[in-house]
Length: 79
Ligand code: FES
Image 1: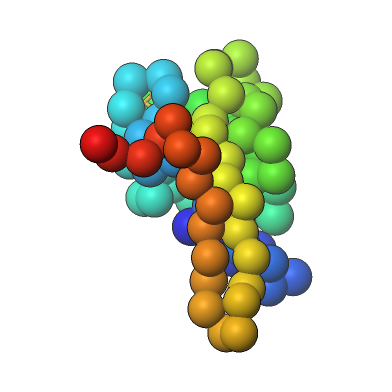
Image 2: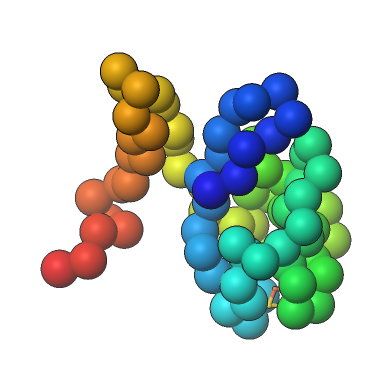
């Protein structure tokens, strides 16, 4: 989960689609996150790579009564 400069939140997959790098350890600017392993860049809004990698999965984030709610499609849930 990342917070953009405007205060909005973006939730993305924890594992990079390239080789499983730790996206949470990546650096962000206001548009992209850089995977720390091989520096592929992914748009925070869409997950699309700007460096030619497969897209990063993104998740809808809502604030409900002060709680952060991340919507995960049923196919992504364990079990
Ligand atoms: S594992 Fe993320 S760019 Fe290679």
